[in-house]
Length: 149
Image (cartoon, rainbow, N blue to C red; front, top):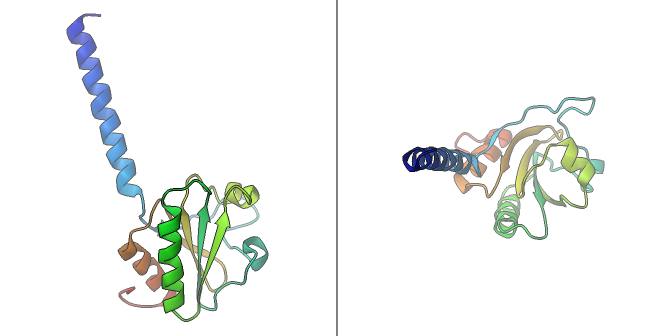
């Protein structure tokens, strides 16, 4: 292969990798509606799954790991929001300690945040550090708040 041909291949690979990186980055922190995992478990979590009670109106669940860079700031944001909203609970789960749940829910990165309804149904989820505006909108949708803020 000639030098020019090699340079063209290199440029194409760099452009494709850059586009893929931007695409993945754009998805980080965005909440999307939950899709029920296949199998008999459905997409609801119980107090036994969480090791804590569900919130009266909704529950925020964060999957974290010890070495996660964004887990601390995400934990602070979720805890603050839960303290400001009556009936909203916050539960943090160590993904490494709960591999059963991590696999069942297809948690592929941390932090992953789930927004559960009062019945434990997963209403939406986000991977990566959540954007505050997106989090407020996702929680607002479950709590029946128009603007989410």
